[in-house]
Structure formats: structure tokens, C-alpha cells
Length: 452
Image 1: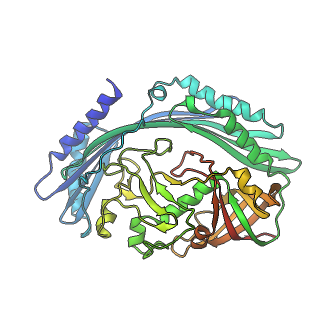
Image 2: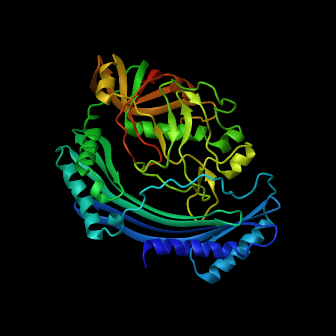
């Protein structure tokens, strides 16, 4: 039986559950099947290998503003009947919520994308293992000071279907993969760490040499790092750090957080909140993004949403619940971790509109700065309500337009509000990473560096 037929079977199963709705009930059936492969190589040998399939169903019932939910990690008909009964029972324990309700069709069509790759679906296991081994070999060949902590291959394939008695009836499938390597570089008594990775819809798209080179360079260029003197500088985030930074920004654009007063952007809609250079979009319809998708967690069509346009705050992201609470419409941003949970809200595939120059050209115009290649404590050191930003970092000095000495054990501090307004330039080096934000180099003026 083909994967397409299997996906239709999931939708038919969801339909059968929804057909059992009782008068006065809203009912949702979310059915999914996942297949994941994880390979870890150490010193040329397979240290860890897992290929696991999971499937299950989550049923949500809403009646008179109260919600009941239950799930099962099987698609056995008798288990599904038990889950439906349990979800109904759990309604009685729910707290009445005036905004509770399921998504309804909103007229937005699904954007056609190539999210399923047959090459990956049929890729032999031995070749997956060989990719991880080859990444380790190439990384070790880069520099004699480098050793590999681990080299990994990972892939995931997902099929899902969502049906509701409010009119939602959709299904889809997608797959993707990546390789990653962690490194340690040693010189004398000093050791520094690094990493590199490459993503693709199939292993044929991997750039193993680039991943190996980055993992070696990230570790070796920090050897001999010292603690820098404190001052105010221009910081340059490399693409990976920018992606992490955007992850923090995404939490402030979450419609549910805004409704609860937990965002620094509350009551800022339409304001200039960033340099006009900054255009931030959430675009899961861009199939280059690792987290590209055609459906959100409630079965609505995923769509391109402009959040900050030329520095002006234009939109928050919403699922159907947060949209009702904010008296607006869902932006197709329901997120859920699978059949075991109910939908939340979040960004799906964040991207900054790139600039025109590469990182080297950007650095050439900076007299005194820091190229930040890693940060620590990003989530604990950032307050999404006040905007306070203070994180540990390591990287390289920038002096008179050139990258120089490595530095570590320093803190960079500002506020998210100030940093967005102080963006000096955005690079053109978009890096598609195995996370929900794309990386790109950005330069930010007037950041406090606290060191020696």
C-alpha cells in the first residue's frame, strides 16, 4: 500500500470518529504516524541506532465551553472507542472557557509544496549510516587538533490527518533529514567545542564538506581565547546565533502571550519597533525551510505571515483559540507536538528578509566589534516581558574591519527593544537550519560587552 493511500486511511479514520459526535459537541480527531531514524557514530563505529515508528490518535471534545481530551498510542478500533469515551468523560472536569472552540474553515487554500521526498522515503539504512561516518572522517581530516565528539544522521517522516465536525478535513505528509557533528579542538591544556550540520529533503542535498569545515573552524578558532575588556561595541551574530535570537523574538509575537500580558509588544501594534531594515516573516510555505509545512496543528492551511514589515509591527501569530480571545482570525499558527497534546500557538518558520552583502563585507565596515559565534543562557537570560537581554557568549574580536583574536567568558547585554532598533545591517547569507528559524548574519550597534 502506498504512503498516499495510508494518509487517506488516516483521514478516513478521523472521519469515522467525528461522525460519532453527539448533539451540542464539537469534536476533533487528530491522527498521525511518524517514522524516525537516529544514527550516532563514534570513532568509525555505530554507537547508537534507532529506527522507530509511532502512531496514535488524539480526540478533543468541547461542550458548553468545557474541553475534554484523551489520546492513545495505537489505531486499534477498540482503543479509539475507549479514547472517545474518555475524552467525553474529561469534559466534565474541564473549566468553562468562553473562548474555547475548534477551528473552522477560513477559506485559505493550502499552498502546494514538495514536502515529501521519495528518495528519502526509500533511502537504505546502510547509506544513512555511511553519511554519518563520512562526516566524521571529513571532520577529522580538517585539522589535527580536532577530535569528533559524535557524528549523527537523523530523519523524520510524518503523516497526519485532522477532521472536525466544524468543517475541517485535511491530511498531509512530509519528511526531512540532517547530519550534524560535534567537535573538540585541543591545544596544550585548552579545549574548545564546535559543531556543524547540513539539512535536506533527502541525503542527496547534504553538503558534508561544509558541515565538517564549520565544525572544525568553530572549535579551532576559539583556541587561545581570552576575556575581553568591558565596553560598548557592535556585535555581529553569525547565522546560527541569529536563528536562536529569532526564537526568542518569536515568543514575544505569540498571540496567546500577548493576550496574557506576557509580551513586550503588548499594545504596540502599528508601532515602529525595529530598524526599517528589519522585515520578519513567518513563512512555512517556503519549502527551503526545514520546518516548512502545508497545515498547522488544527488543520488550517499554513500561510505566509508578515510580523514586522520595514520595522513596523504588523501582526502576532494566532491559533483559533488565541484569535477568538483577541477578536481576530487565526493566522494558521496552531502548533502541537503530535497526537498526545492539544494545540498551542507559535511561529512555524521564521525568516528575516536578507540584505545584499555577505558576512565578510559587513565586518569590513566595523572598526570595533565582536563576531558572536555562540551564546549561553539565551532563554534564562532574556525576559520576553521587560525585554531585558543578558547572555554569556564567545566569539572573535573585530578590529578595523578584520576578524581577530578569539574571546570568551563575556556577557552581551541590552534590551530586545533596543537591539531591534539598533540593527545596523542584515546579511545575504541565509542558512537553512534544523530548527524553526532560518539563520542569517546580523549586525547590532551599541551593545554592552561585559568582560574583564
